[in-house]
Length: 114
Length: 82
Image (cartoon, rainbow over all chains, first blue to last red):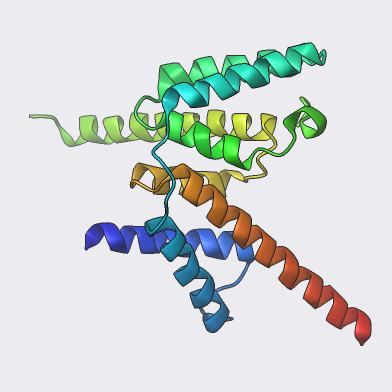
């Protein structure tokens, strides 16, 4: 029960941040977003994260950056990935998997100065 | 038995470490152009630590962003009609 409550509270925060809808200002809209998000998070058919697949995708991205002469971008990514391997253990692959799923044409849009 | 001061110090070290982890993931997120601010990323990390599937979470985030964009467009259109 505590787990469901925690998921609910985190989903509330996520919905509020991404949609700018609040539980007080627009309760109907907020609740609709929250219910649909919670349903999608709890009932899905996605397989568990394969850590080898995640690291292969990141290696592929590194190679792509270098092929297109974006060595600085590749080096910056590599440095952060090495840092993460040292710092965080248990959930790194899952968090990197999320970032890869949300990644939008990094070669064209990512700038090192950001 | 650890003293109160030691416990407080341990907590501070753990909090600093957690902040550092979020900072690095945020930098990776920027390099991958994942379009997540620090606060949203830290909620996503908490959700994943609570067993949420990353792919399911990514699809929820995309859906919520799409809805927010549509709402924003509707607001701008209704302002334009006035």
